[in-house]
Amino acid sequence: MITDSLIVLGAYLLGSISSAIIVCRLMGLPDPRSQGSNNPGATNVLRIGGKKAAAITLLGDSLKGLIPMVAAHLLEATPLVLAFTGIAAFLGHLYPVFFGFKGGKGVATALGVQFGLHWGIGGAVALIWLFVAKVVNISSLSALVSMALAPLIVWAIWPEMELVVMQVALSILLFWRHRSNISNLLKGSEESIANSNNKET
Image 1 (cartoon, rainbow, N blue to C red):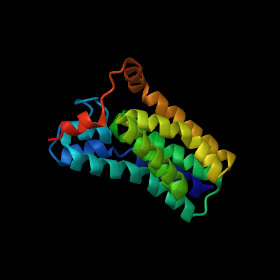
Image 2 (cartoon, rainbow, N blue to C red):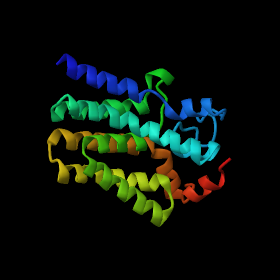
Image 3 (cartoon, one colour):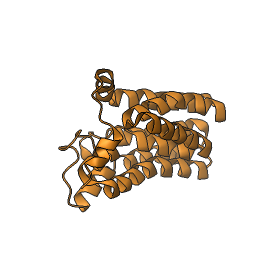
Image 4 (cartoon, rainbow, N blue to C red):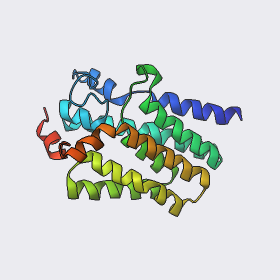
């Protein structure tokens, strides 16, 4: 029981480490919370710092979800503990204790959780993201579509109720964090991936 609690707590604390803010500080870039979309995530780092900074941020955010889930697997955690671990890592990214509880939107961390849960789940969600991104060229819409389908993917590959509920919770939180993007999509003003790339410095 103590081990399970430590796994969940560790997942939240690791999730609370903001890759975007740290990468920008180390690379001498503006604080992502004060530039672009003001979101400390890989897409905004791409806008203000270019592909290299964005790639490092994406990797860091993904590892925050992947590492706790792999650790939980190695400790033979139950599906319930796996579910709490995934939610804790995700909440750490969204509401980081080290950065005033103001974090990113969670796409990369959610994907890390999914890969850590089962490679097939993460792979399927990533493929959907890539396909939608190729078709519509909008990062936020790709994330929304892939995460909307993610609970069905979890149910198809690992139909444990605790894990399906975990993914439903992650998807709902991600949609909530993307509410401004959803508004922009409805108005037709959401920025494309190509425009973000064109702002590379």
